[in-house]
Length: 146
Image (tube, rainbow, N blue to C red; front, top):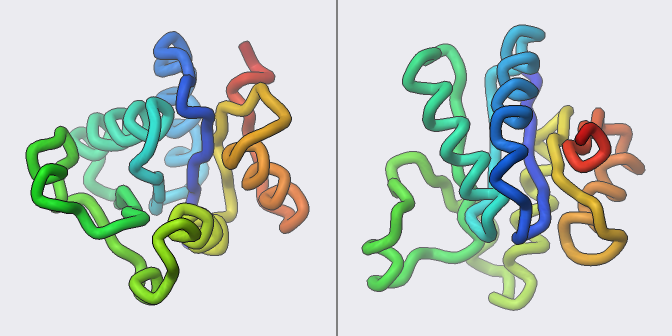
C-alpha cells in the first residue's frame, strides 16, 4: 500500500489549504490510503486539519500525526487529538535535539509521495524535500503551483 507524507515551512500561508485538500483527494483517488504528518508549525497543523476533515467523509484512509516527543502535561491542553497520533518505536532512544530529524526520516521511509510547501532553500522542510527527491519519492510542491 502506498503512503504520503508532508513537509512544509512553519510559516506556510493558509490560502494554500484548498489546493492542499485537492491534492490529497487526488492521491486518494489514485489509491493512496496512508498519510503521515508531523506536529510542528502551521503547515503540519493545516495538513492535520485537512486529513481529519477528509477522514470524516472517507473512512477508507488512515492518517497519523507523528510525534517527535512524548507530550508533556501542558501539551494535553492543546488542539491535538492524541487518539490520532503515533510515537514511532525507536525514537525514545534518540536525543531530544535530533528527534524531529529522526521522525522526519521515519515518515519519509514510510512514504512513496511527499506533498510539501517549500519556497526557501534552507531549513528542515527544504532538507527533507531534497532527501525525498534523492530517494526517488514523488514530490509535489505547492509553492511551485501557486
